[in-house]
Amino acid sequence: MPEGYYQKYDNYDAININKTKEIPIDYEGWMGVPITALDKPEIMECMEIKGFIRPYIQGKSIYFRTIVRWLWPKLLNAYQTGEPVEVEGIYHSAELWGREQGITFKIK
Image (cartoon, rainbow, N blue to C red; front, top):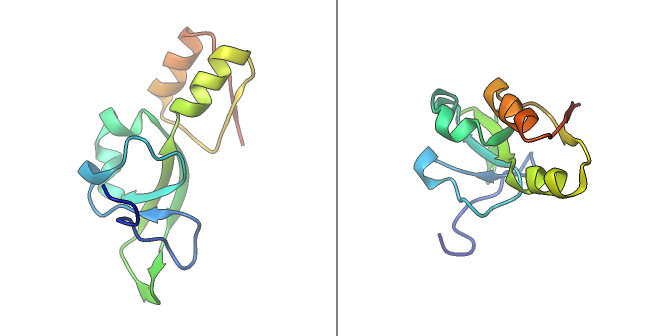
Protein backbone atom coordinates (compact mmCIF):
# COMPACT_ATOMS: atom_id res chain seq x y z
CA MET A 1 0.00 0.00 0.00
CA PRO A 2 1.25 3.52 -0.66
CA GLU A 3 2.74 5.69 2.09
CA GLY A 4 -0.02 7.36 4.10
CA TYR A 5 -2.63 4.76 3.04
CA TYR A 6 -3.37 3.76 6.63
CA GLN A 7 -5.00 6.24 8.98
CA LYS A 8 -3.69 6.73 12.53
CA TYR A 9 -5.95 6.77 15.55
CA ASP A 10 -6.57 9.96 17.49
CA ASN A 11 -6.53 8.15 20.84
CA TYR A 12 -3.93 5.40 20.34
CA ASP A 13 -0.52 5.04 18.68
CA ALA A 14 -1.53 2.54 15.98
CA ILE A 15 -2.66 2.49 12.37
CA ASN A 16 -6.14 1.40 11.33
CA ILE A 17 -6.59 -1.71 9.22
CA ASN A 18 -10.11 -2.11 7.82
CA LYS A 19 -9.76 -5.67 6.49
CA THR A 20 -7.46 -8.50 7.54
CA LYS A 21 -6.34 -8.94 3.93
CA GLU A 22 -4.94 -5.37 4.11
CA ILE A 23 -2.58 -6.08 7.04
CA PRO A 24 0.85 -4.90 5.82
CA ILE A 25 3.46 -7.65 6.07
CA ASP A 26 6.35 -5.22 6.54
CA TYR A 27 4.93 -2.87 9.19
CA GLU A 28 6.53 -3.29 12.64
CA GLY A 29 4.34 -0.93 14.67
CA TRP A 30 1.00 -1.48 16.39
CA MET A 31 -2.04 -1.99 14.17
CA GLY A 32 -5.74 -1.98 14.92
CA VAL A 33 -7.33 -4.89 13.08
CA PRO A 34 -10.98 -5.99 13.00
CA ILE A 35 -11.93 -8.26 15.89
CA THR A 36 -12.80 -10.90 13.28
CA ALA A 37 -9.04 -11.28 12.71
CA LEU A 38 -9.05 -13.41 15.88
CA ASP A 39 -10.89 -16.04 13.82
CA LYS A 40 -7.88 -16.33 11.49
CA PRO A 41 -5.20 -18.30 13.34
CA GLU A 42 -2.94 -18.32 10.26
CA ILE A 43 -2.53 -14.58 10.82
CA MET A 44 -2.92 -14.24 14.57
CA GLU A 45 -0.35 -16.93 15.39
CA CYS A 46 2.27 -14.56 13.98
CA MET A 47 1.11 -11.57 16.03
CA GLU A 48 1.71 -10.09 19.45
CA ILE A 49 -1.67 -9.14 20.91
CA LYS A 50 -1.95 -6.02 23.08
CA GLY A 51 -5.70 -5.78 23.68
CA PHE A 52 -8.89 -4.17 22.45
CA ILE A 53 -9.78 -0.51 22.01
CA ARG A 54 -12.59 1.70 20.74
CA PRO A 55 -10.56 3.98 18.43
CA TYR A 56 -11.29 7.41 17.04
CA ILE A 57 -10.22 8.72 13.64
CA GLN A 58 -10.62 12.43 13.00
CA GLY A 59 -12.89 12.69 16.04
CA LYS A 60 -15.24 9.90 14.95
CA SER A 61 -15.60 6.62 16.83
CA ILE A 62 -15.17 3.47 14.74
CA TYR A 63 -15.70 -0.23 15.47
CA PHE A 64 -13.68 -1.92 18.22
CA ARG A 65 -10.26 -3.09 17.12
CA THR A 66 -7.77 -5.68 18.28
CA ILE A 67 -4.33 -4.10 18.71
CA VAL A 68 -1.58 -6.31 17.27
CA ARG A 69 1.90 -6.23 15.74
CA TRP A 70 4.05 -8.80 13.96
CA LEU A 71 6.21 -11.04 16.13
CA TRP A 72 8.87 -11.68 13.45
CA PRO A 73 11.28 -8.83 14.35
CA LYS A 74 11.28 -9.87 18.01
CA LEU A 75 11.61 -13.57 17.20
CA LEU A 76 14.55 -12.97 14.88
CA ASN A 77 16.32 -10.88 17.50
CA ALA A 78 15.69 -13.51 20.19
CA TYR A 79 16.95 -16.27 17.94
CA GLN A 80 20.15 -14.33 17.20
CA THR A 81 20.85 -13.07 20.72
CA GLY A 82 19.29 -15.68 23.01
CA GLU A 83 17.38 -12.90 24.81
CA PRO A 84 13.78 -13.64 25.84
CA VAL A 85 10.98 -12.13 23.79
CA GLU A 86 8.89 -9.63 25.76
CA VAL A 87 5.28 -9.63 24.58
CA GLU A 88 1.92 -8.32 25.72
CA GLY A 89 0.22 -11.59 24.76
CA ILE A 90 0.42 -14.27 22.05
CA TYR A 91 -1.43 -17.31 20.77
CA HIS A 92 -0.44 -20.50 22.56
CA SER A 93 0.64 -22.18 19.31
CA ALA A 94 3.05 -19.31 18.55
CA GLU A 95 4.57 -19.69 22.00
CA LEU A 96 4.96 -23.46 21.50
CA TRP A 97 6.65 -22.94 18.14
CA GLY A 98 9.05 -20.40 19.67
CA ARG A 99 9.96 -22.74 22.51
CA GLU A 100 10.72 -25.49 19.97
CA GLN A 101 13.20 -23.05 18.39
CA GLY A 102 14.83 -22.37 21.77
CA ILE A 103 13.10 -18.99 22.21
CA THR A 104 11.75 -18.01 25.60
CA PHE A 105 8.92 -15.57 26.16
CA LYS A 106 8.35 -13.04 28.92
CA ILE A 107 4.69 -12.01 28.98
CA LYS A 108 4.12 -8.56 30.47
